[in-house]
View 1 (cartoon, helix red, strand yellow):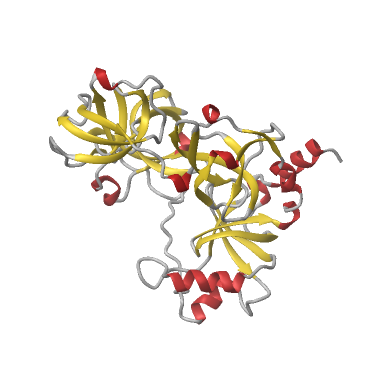
View 2 (spheres, rainbow, N blue to C red; view 1 turned 180 degrees about the horizontal axis):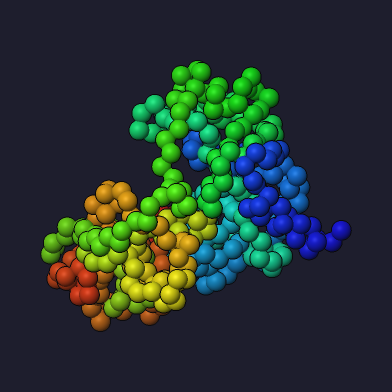
Length: 365
């Protein structure tokens, strides 16, 4: 069988219809954040994934950009894997990146551009890592303690595991996991040993049973800044010093919502600007990034938690003086020190600032 046919078979196996509740799969656990967030690969795909990890030519620094798919040397996994660039810090002829391992679910920071390559195979293949959470496994306090995470890693071990699908959502599978190291499933073992609580808090909304949510207009709070403040920031959006969004706040009025974006998918705070295609799409603004994007209605969720709107927005609309315009423009995630010279209104009038570039430490190059 040719390489293309093998990869097409891999993609077919990753369809959501393949993971119906009640189905059982043999998997390898590739990365653990906590019992409510870990990643697995289908054991049957582990050898075939190596086809996607072939290295092409070294990447040119000028070709490095956010969301670009690459092959890189992962410190976490100690091998070359597929990744997507999430953040870049440039310095002259080099760069330092944060890269997400598409097929394993882990994230590496401070990856030197010298360890990044173009993929040998130019093919559009979705991530091979499945995001999962254990069924009936809740923290005893607000969050899971480190000893809980260590215990979970111990009970999972290095062997393949038997995974039974309990619930299926677009962005995460709720599963029961059994391994050689556990007399019971992992969640039950953690609960019986008093690491976790054997219960479930169902905060998911069933769209077929839940009443229609009322539209709710919200005001996102602004980060308090004043003239003379000096902040360490990174560029979220905008490509010139005269028009950029920094990582801090703006007061924005609109229809509050959560929007599923990115790869791996996650929800960002946003507000709806306008419906662009009735019943299908809307233009929204990501308040913590300062970006406007068009999204499907399926990727929008109503805001139901007060804390979602009470926390100040992160993006701050800024402009710099003409004598600070950089010849090479601005790249997303470039880092600067800024000083507030004049306050804007946090909405359509930008704060006036001065900017100073930040260098990459030598140990990150």
